[in-house]
Image (tube, rainbow, N blue to C red; front, side, top):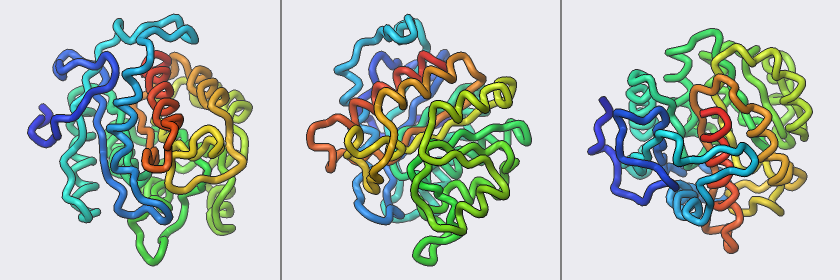
Length: 288
């Protein structure tokens, strides 16, 4: 059973409850941004997403489904030792492990993208070779090191590739990275540049009977739609395309998800936080 003392008493996501035992989905904030390479501030992302969610309706006209019909709790943000990367990653991984062992689906709010590594590892420990990882991002995140550090938001997928079946890693919307990262992806994984919708449709039949984990970096969107992020990259998808990507995966066997890199200090109009909150709503109603 998860230890609720490890969490701060923060605000909650729209319509979430406090009933961990009877919830099938568990929302957790991971307010970590120690290894970001440009603009910091994603530690404030989870709370901004929750606050923005309160402006949404519980009902989704896209799905004709209602959050009030779902059982999910929001435990708040993990209490992390500021600046201690290794210990923070362990705390995040331990929380993910407990949720998974309790047969619930983890839904993590970041925070920087490095938080995904220990979560994916714990999901992989349960599902093994069959696990599919769908990686939505502007960046490849396949570096072995960044500024001579193995623990970086620029290395997260490469770290995951050490224990995943690499042929089950799918990248969507990628448009930034060094040549070596692309060469690794083209040899070992499934890399789709620039686009999201058509590539997902192409691989749907290949992944439909497998357990799926989704890691969604908000910078896969063009900065015109999601300026509130630390490493904005022009040339991304629209908010409509992001929502459509979620809806295409309707009723797939998604066993967990994270949404990362929302940095509200650069989101002066709040459009990134509200977009992230809406993507979470649609994810809960589509496949979680």
